[in-house]
Image (cartoon, rainbow, N blue to C red):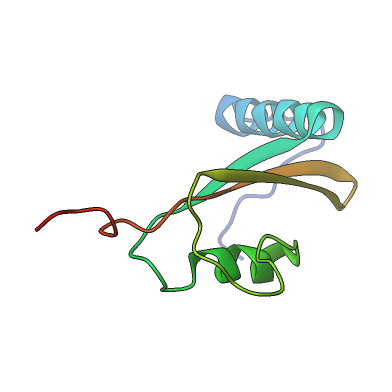
Length: 102
């Protein structure tokens, strides 16, 4: 219907083969090395930065009695998604504005 069908012996256009090759390389790299992501939460004191990070990956960053974060805290979470190992570094920071003499 108006479109040209590809013959089995017709070469694949270079654009498609390069794209497929790059995607294949990326998939192989992900399967062997995994993916690493860093998430950093920054904001004013008391807005729920620690709670947000705790709830995203169900990691206990927040203590049973919430206290203000006074130093930078990094927590790593490792899991698999479709057979690909993923590492997420969650960085919780103290609220800004607490120690400003304004």
